[in-house]
Image 1 (tube, rainbow, N blue to C red):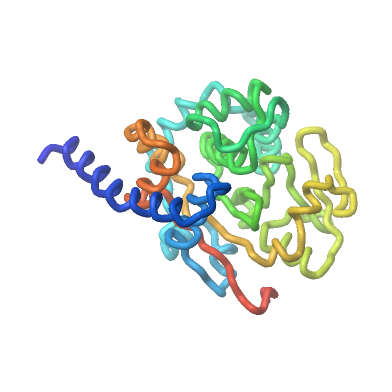
Image 2 (cartoon, rainbow, N blue to C red):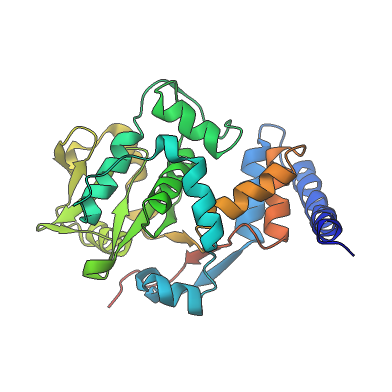
Amino acid sequence: MTKKMTKKLKYITALIVALPLIYLLLDQLPKAYSARYALVQVRESIFSETTQDLSPFLAPPEKLMQEHKFLTDSRDDKEALKKSIQAYTPVLPTEQTNVLRTIGAILVTLPREGETTCGTFKNLDDILAKITSKTVSGCCSDYTQAYLALSSALDLFSREVRIPGHVFAETFDKPHNRWIWVDPLFGLTAQMRGKQLSIIELRQAFLDKEPITFINHRNGYTFSEKEMLPIMKDLFTKENFEKISMVLGNNIEEEEELYKDIAVLPKPARQLVAYAMGVKPVTLFYNSESPRHE
């Protein structure tokens, strides 16, 4: 059997597995629910793992890949991604090695302007083209996908993290051996007592009601929790930060290549095929009666 035929057989097998899940779930949900919402329900009920241990969220990239099967792009895929999104990648000064500055440069490249939409983009290139040109402003998942791609193109290791109703990213600061929490939609990082926070530290600050300073990298403003926008106040709550989760992979290019091969399918079907083939990473949910991490 040729390599091309083997690839097609994998698609067909994955589709056979994925499509019944789509139709079964859509049939059971009220008509008011969208296919997008249905996919989220499938993902969270089937393609996920649960832990009562916060250590995976603290683990460096190497440990994530070794112990938690974190998916990453191959070297060739990373080079292909760099070439495909080169037009959107911010140009950094050659002497710039500060991870936080690089994060800021990426966030400035992704302005939040234009008509707002969510999940309607055709692919990664479509997301980047419309957001960077200020034509369309996507939702949190669109901005996070764009952020992950641009950070990979700039040789940063980033991942997707979540709370109920909102999607963030984290970037690993290798010189300081720490994760930096990033909100690509609002263009934010957070700090406390001058230290950049990870999602675990931000979570604990919300639980302990500690003062948090948010930095808007698009306009340079800093503000406190009390000064958050109303939409942020609805999302950034103690209750939501008790329920964090992490996507176990940042293999952006591998996913994009698969989606191109099965572009004839609607987006929910493409994503479920990717899950069934093991290309789309599963989500790790933190769940514990005791929210404190010692």
